[in-house]
Length: 200
Image (cartoon, rainbow, N blue to C red; front, side, top):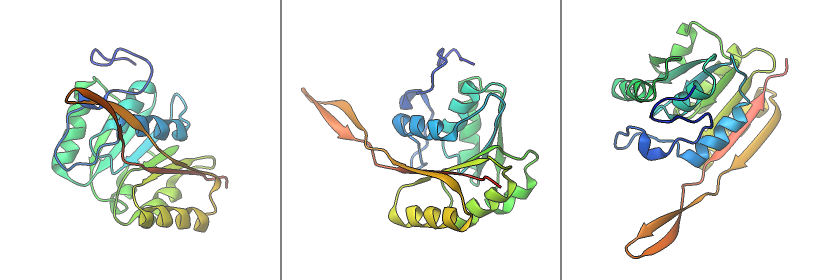
């Protein structure tokens, strides 16, 4: 459902429209679009976003699926408040922000997910395996990896969990930027996006 700040039904909110905090992870627009496409959302999907950071995914999904429910999990109080502010900024009403550390806090969540997005968390394998337990058959996990260690850990977890229909996409995005009198292309940091389904 469009907001005044983003009056469109398509995702892809420009990065500068979100409130940021220095040093807090931020999923950039082009990566966000790839990630959302891998979630394969339905109109009434329940999404857990673990390590929600700035809240870009909850905001985009909240606008895209007004009949859905998004649980944004973030361990840091200041960052959790940032997610709330970004939701308010875009008039998103279907996001609940939970302040807590995954995987320990997951058993306290009141609704079980159809989709899980994992954007952060140091014990990535433990988080993925714990979240997997709550997924129904045909549930889906999408996780991001910014380094080789995370890529290996997520891949290994999918293998141990016998995930099906695994997909791995690496973003390679360049943006046109003005520097002085010239326009140059600047690379966005590459991210691996891994997804898998629970079929039993």
